[in-house]
Length: 381
Ligand SMILES: Nc1ncnc2c1ncn2[C@@H]1O[C@H](COP(=O)(O)OP(=O)(O)O)[C@@H](O)[C@H]1O
Ligand SMILES: CC(=O)OP(=O)(O)O
Ligand SMILES: [Mg+2]
Image (cartoon, rainbow, N blue to C red):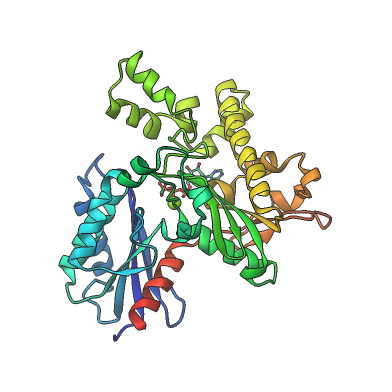
């Protein structure tokens, strides 16, 4: 291996984010995002990746650069097979493709990213870093759904969990903020972005998470429902006459905050609440109610909670969400300081009071750094 740079590709359902990281000096020579794939001039993910390659080339940092050591790809679903960062081969791509039915919004985009990058630089090592990997330590009692065992095993129906790269990074960074070893700390991580998930991390190992077979279960999200009674699906089908695909689209794209009030962006919801908008207020209240239920549940799962970490777009930026989620929990040893909570900063910080037994923190996630580090470690080994 020659270079010290890693290109990280995070292909989402409608966007491709990229970052070029130099592992020798910690610098990030390039980063960017191609959005609204499929809506306008960017027809599909292949076109988006071509644009990424062109943007990098225009900066003299193209994929042909000899300084490039590897490409690291975020892959959302790794099933039961992939629990570690994995060097990509034809066979690995085939396995990732087989998992598409379990992550139809995410894995196809990840596969396209891998194929385009491999076609541009067939000689370069490419590594897949899986969202599910960090959750592979979840005990069976939490990972198994209470359904017929043979059916569940035959079809791979179990809790996999997602956003694992973020939960791993943030739980470690939280321990660091507290000046303690990850092995000593029990943390509840609240990853609140467009997709949202909670995890319970005991001594650095994940023991429970809110997303399940797919990234649909758990918290209220931007456009996804999170938890509902599964019988609602039978009802919508039998009585409502909806097809499976229609219900899939309903729960993944027309639900969550967007389904409740028409907006999926917490900034817009905050603005509308300020104007007394009742639908926005109710959407916010439902979002917070669900979040608090998970905090309570994970407190019971962990027994002793040392820290609660807020991360991702909403978690890092919305003081209102953090305040509402943590309000009135002094009996749990949780007390947020209003002034600290209202401050803004790009680095990890505490927002709890001195008296709070549980440290409450805002910890910016860095999935790109985590993917680059895991990729570089694998290719330099
Ligand atoms: N200043 C802000 N205040 C409140 N919410 C914000 C702010 N900035 C971003 N957000 C929220 O963060 C979301 C995006 O989070 P992000 O983690 O970037 O999502 P993703 O990685 O899933 O695209 C937005 O949809 C919005 O709800
Ligand atoms: C897995 C998942 O939900 O990812 P995102 O939040 O990027 O949509
Ligand atoms: Mg994200």
